[in-house]
Length: 73
Image (cartoon, rainbow, N blue to C red; front, side, top):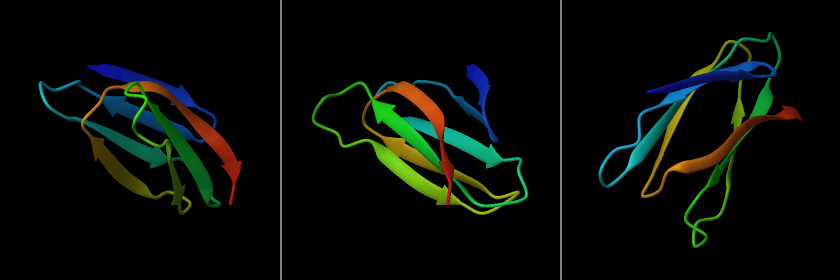
């Protein structure tokens, strides 16, 4: 299990055999974007708008190469 923090976000993921789900929580009061860059080069990076104190998840058939706060929405 990987857990980390970047900017407003805390996130976690546990790479699965076929897919990986990244769970995230925006701890700031205002909306921010979270960006997930996937290791498999055929996948476009995910850029998701998350409301203040919002939570969510993103699942792909790849492991994440990078997860970071991509700024205010």
